[in-house]
Image (cartoon, rainbow, N blue to C red; front, side, top):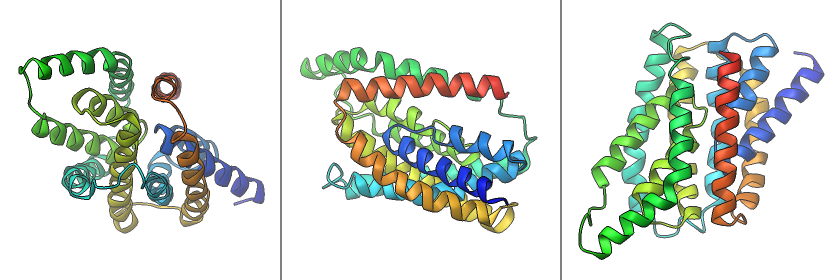
Length: 254
């Protein structure tokens, strides 16, 4: 690896760690960079998952204030995330490389639509609860959706944060900043679990992993400082913009 290639990978890791903490979709920065530098799609995906794991952990730590008192809940949510990540890694290593390319833009697009309509849906749910109708916490549905996003995250990781923020914003009544903290924890779980699996049974470029790990860790802290200061409408707007950019990039690269 040339020195300028190492610098590009490192800077991509910083940006990915930052955007992952604020919204998600950092993989859409690093994955194309690695492919452009000559790495195979599978090696780029596996190295990316391992390398960005420290960044997601860093981002989650950055949101520790918003996560105070949420330990039991996070443990409950982490279990389906981890199980989904394992399933996703199995898919990546067993299915044809292009098997998911057509459905991924659709999933991200659905997530963006959900983020856009989330305030109206949340208001409707709140009115029903106040009226004594539909007071369910949607616990089972939330766990199932976390599991599905975990599968997607273990397979490709891009925009899993957008998806998590979309349905959690609709089904849960927590402030958006707390949901963003929960999203960071769940993304960290998926990346760590997938990374462990890939490290033992998949092709990995360890120099790339090291550069992404350092860069994304720095980016995770930067992202936490930025994201925690964004008002809810601005944060939602950023989610929508990044989600649309993710769709465009996926379609173009597909």
